[in-house]
Length: 161
Image 1: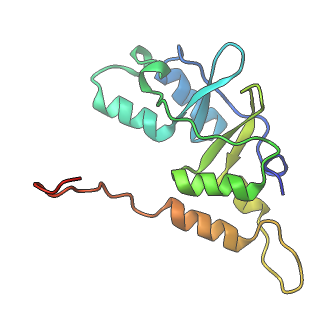
Image 2: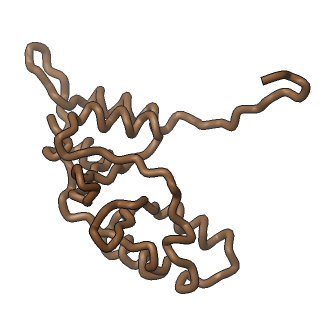
């Protein structure tokens, strides 16, 4: 099964110059939790999540209309391509602990969003004798890795690295 068989093809987006108030309104109206950040050529340059926006608003003494997406967006971008195998995308999600990936083409342009919600809706039970491309077990294993605690690594004083 390919990412293109599962992905949502009509994603909402935002731009670097957009303010947080407008981005939050898009999240609310589209009932989503992540916005790909695109440039004028519709190339993905990052993503912002509802959590990113909430933390930005809670840690700055500024109104949402005074903060831009450029002030909040992370330099990290994890994505997949439409033709990627779904198992490869699940591995990226698990390793990077993200529940959503922008789906981008070879030119870096946005084609859709792959979310764990979409993956879950396409999963099937494993039945003896029947090949399943995306099983409930695949979803459960990925979710277990996604939700594994990420505790900071502590280094003892006086111990050489």
